[in-house]
Amino acid sequence: MSLPQARPLRSAATGALSGTLRVPGDKSISHRSLMFGAVAVGETVIHGLLEGEDVLNTAAAMRALGAQAERGADGVWRVRGAGLGGLAEPAGVLDMGNSGTAARLLIGLVASHPITTFFTGDASLVKRPMMRVITPLERMGASFVSRAGGRLPLAVVGTDQTVPFTYRLPVASAQVKSAVLLCGLNTAGVTTVIESEPTRDHTELMLRHFGATVTTERLEDGALAVSVTGQPELTGREIFVPADPSSAAFPLVAALLRPGSEVLLRDVGMNPRRTGLYDTLLEMGADIGFENRRNLAGEPVADLRVRGGELKGVVVPPDRAPSMIDEYPILAVAASFAQGTTVMLGLKELRVKESDRLAMVAEGLTRCGVRVEVGADDSLTVYGTGRPPQGGATVATAMDHRIAMSFLVMGMGTAEPVQVDDGAFIDTSFPGFTTVMNGLGARIGAA
Image (spheres, rainbow, N blue to C red):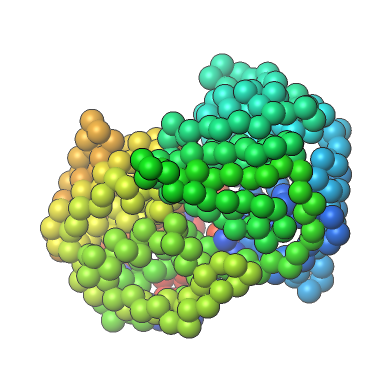
């Protein structure tokens, strides 16, 4: 695929932020709603789908596999599925853009179909490890041809003779868990994934919503065994996509860092396995109120009222990482404004995200005058002084949307403006980010 033209952006200090907004729909739930609707019988109606580039690539992939997926004039998406086991062999290569979630889940879904499917992605995605899904899916019966290390581009040679088995995750990963469960969905028998640490459970919740039998059992060693009974008939459903908590993190932290701010974020997903950032910020002394708690199609949501104030350094335990793995870059920015030292433990998975986020965050903070240390145990220590960092740097983003947004938020409070070398990839998860933030009072513009 051709890369979007680089778009350097610059963020300057601002006063108090104020306003009410709803950030775009949850990316994880958006991907799954399209995929599960594509293998269901009948029509799935999706309200609030994230229309970022990553999710639009997933919609295109489902059309290439034989489902119908279209946006109506009312902004509502409708998917007419091919039925479980009914996916067709695509005529071309499926380009998953920047999304590891879409690639890994879809690889699992097509592995139990007797078709050959080719996958590729952008310059960032083709560097990300896929052996973590290839290994269990090969044991279920699928075959793969890939570059060294199991990286994209790759071909999945699927089969309708996959066999169920029990797989213990070597690393905490909702993507790997979901890939195995989705292969098991079209496999006779019961497929089980054992996870030592709870990861995002959007797949389990949504599969139940579509009519699958998914169970979760606590084992004697404390691990969770998640099982799916194969070959159910999935029925199209109505889905309401909550506002993405990972996207909400950026205006939330921006408001916390600017004295006098008050921002209301509506309909934010409050899945307990996604709220690690909120828990951490509350420990740091953040003023966050949770209002109007309710459920939307099986997912808990709330409105978040955020007020600016002082933060203090804390120790973030490693077992919190699965519930906030995408939020560490913006947490590190918050920590750089806090009084005292913040230690974030267990960040190994940050090294295999859209970029090596651990290294990128440390480098960017250092450039902005913040003292940081990266430990041999993949920890990150940020030494906050309680004063705004200096800023005044250009930060490399390595095509990573969350790195770009994090440092643009940082520039809203630093002594000197912060520039990112490329903000083009922000649209993969948060289309309209600059407009939304400027509507609250930010000063983000072309560099």
